[in-house]
Amino acid sequence: MTAIQVWNQHEIALASAREADARARREQRQANSTRPRRPSQHHPDEWTERAACRNHENPAAFFPNRGDWRTEQTQAVLALCRSCQVRSECLEEAVRLADDHGIRGGLSGRERRQLREARP
Image (cartoon, rainbow, N blue to C red; front, side, top):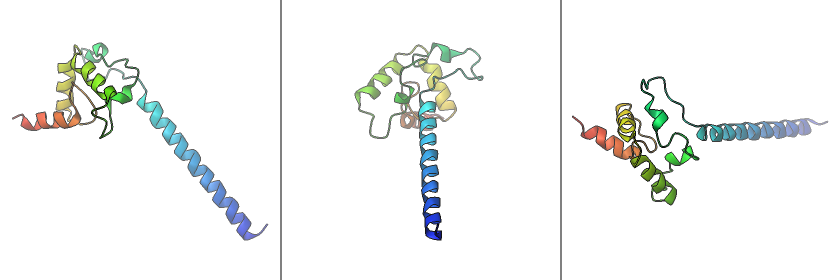
């Protein structure tokens, strides 16, 4: 076997390993995005157990991409969130923790940031 053949086999093995690694990372991200929310230790009254989103079929829907805010799915998530019995607790915690990602308390991250900045 020539040095070039050895090198080519090495490059093929490297590419295969990179592809397997990328696939594993992608599968892990997908598994994490569909994991149901669990109550946190910092919720003494466990209000998250009563949240309407608690067992939602698609938790990733609460984290729409930048251009997806007008989709039917995002509007349905917003409506669910706004009608939730623990909306105020959720919104207060998101504002307090400066959580600007996804939909929480019936508001987007941008809306929560604006609310936080408007507070004294």
